[in-house]
Amino acid sequence: MNEQIVRNFVEARRARTAVPADPCPADQAEAYAVSAGIRAALSEVVGGWKVGHAPEGSRAPMGAPMYASGFLKSGGVFKFKPGRAMIPEIEIAVRLSRDLPPRPDKTYSRDEILEHCSELLLGIELIERRIPKGAAFALNLADDLGNIGYVVGPAIKVSRDLDLTKLRCQFWIGGALHTDRAGGHAKGDPLSPLVDWANAQRDRHGGMKAGHVVTLGSLTPMIEMLEPAPLRAALEGFGEVSLAMA
Image 1 (tube, helix red, strand yellow):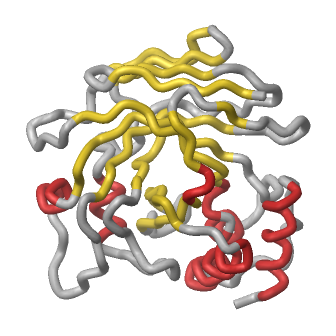
Image 2: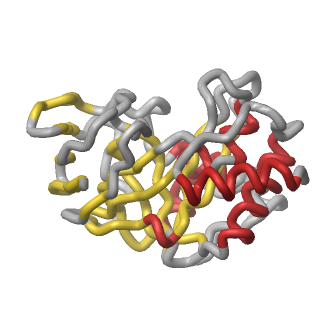
């Protein structure tokens, strides 16, 4: 593990600034090691995960920890830093009722994953990239994919019969409607990234545990906010989630 990369990110997280493009982890395995080193240096606790697929080549499943200190309740206040672009994403998440450890000898099915979940949540992931544009993906993975917080909204019971692929999502930024569409998840089924990551886990943080919130990927197009504005989103069957900014 490259200790210089760890130091760069520790300083960037504390000051909410960016790191240089070099040095960069050699591969995804080193990126996960760097991520664990950063969390240990900051004495942070894992409160959840964001899961998805790498944008390069193999489209391999990936997972990144979300720090417990970054979770906010709906209606809470996020401290926006002037000069730092922030990306909000409206997402469905699950809360785990049981540990979901790596299991190389047997594949997790979608139904079995749902048996490990106590509820489905509507949330807003907050991303503030600490890497320069154009940097290698391994540096983004080491940065936990830019996560800086997660707003936890309303929850519903887990149901195998609920079709998550066509729910209407509306998203307002500063009172202006930004998104209004059905579906929107890049993989169609929002649970797909979690199923794939559960069967390919290779993090260095101890894995997905009971109580963790696992967010499943954006339902809304990417937008970079350059100044603070209140956020509000509604998802069919879930209700609304909101966030104020200071």
